Length: 341
Image 1 (cartoon, helix red, strand yellow):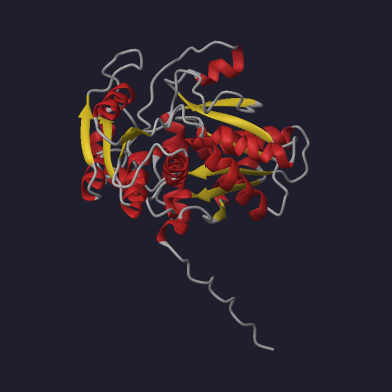
Image 2: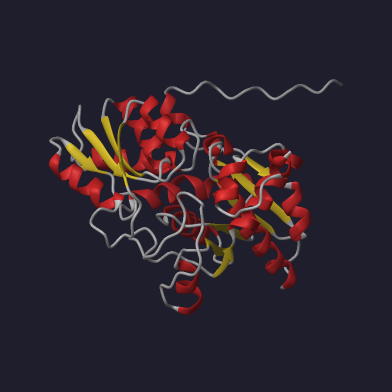
């Protein structure tokens, strides 16, 4: 008897339904390194190319439901880029304008994408959160000064983490047939790790939730020692946090790992050369954290543990940075061997 191919899914009724329901893939190299199954949620498959599409949709729908975003209005946000891209696409689909404030040290690809999507892009110098010129504070002021505008406020708007409670966590649970031992990712706003953590803990309290923190962020020390203290630095975009945002408040973090840029780039290189996945540095850092979590669970004697993480966005968004030999040399980071040649 000849096997028949499965039928393709029915067509969706609108483009915004493309957000979410992303594939989950077993990562061969990380699984071998951890001694257990490591899975990556392919968030680069969202229409805006990143995990931040989920937060963008939930934040805008929440603003509509609360009556603060009216037809023809404007959504203003401060972002490292990916949330802005998601907001611009969702806003376009729903008839809103977009103003995005971004630090001027983020990748050129993100800036060009935002302009191509029709967003008004405002670039500001990178600075500490305490500085009133910080991109978050600048975006809040612009929203207050713009008629008919709402401030998305992704860091402290818990519609962000609700996106992952409602969608990412149940998707992972279903895709892994209700058997998942650990989940880890880095925190930027905190929406993903808090939302997925809360959603998975509702299903099974024994799922271990781990923070994977880059150097230069303060959350590793917070969860390990109770103090917000940063050490070192990282060039990773969109992750790393120095405060407990509203989205992070109450996040069920059981353990924590600190991952260097070098280790993250190691996995970026391996996943590209060995598995055909072109990813950004935040994804590489997440995968390194997943390997660490998997090894921890194996060492504790868990039988064939399964660990999931987030593949945040595509490496094509970083051609001018981590895939540029001159840029890597300027940052004193290792150059991928194929770029060195």
